[in-house]
Length: 158
Figure 1 (cartoon, helix red, strand yellow):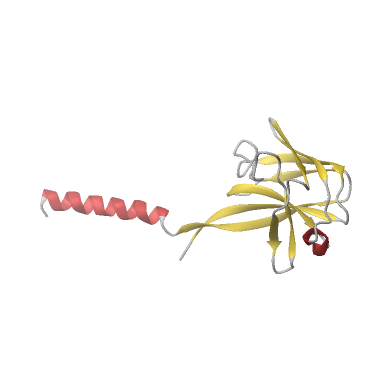
Figure 2: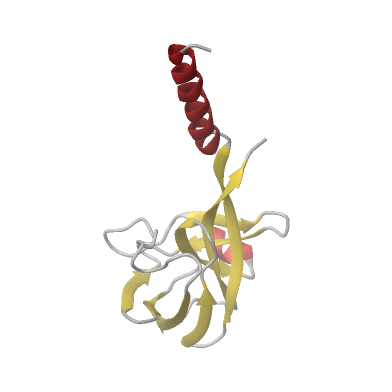
């Protein structure tokens, strides 16, 4: 094998290896119930899963109340470990619907705060880290509720 052929062979192998590592991977939506909401203040520990684009969804156990716009709420969410991030949310800014479990017809309102689309930045939640999350409602939504975490997890596709 000549020197040029070896060089091209190595370049092709490197390209295929790099291309193979990036192609065939995609992000799929994931969801997990993190707590029931029964009081104006709820606090819980959260071990953040592997993935990206973490968001919280306020789910009604009665889906019709959320769909019909009867979920009126206002409060703040604090995420802390070494530092704390506090965001304010309300039903006025949180209008987007999100399914968290379509098999059980479970869905809710994606919590949004001003100047955001609800996605927590990388300083707020990091994969594989633990956090204390505290919800404080100034106005508690009607009907019993649940808080779910939704995110995108990277998987290999076939």
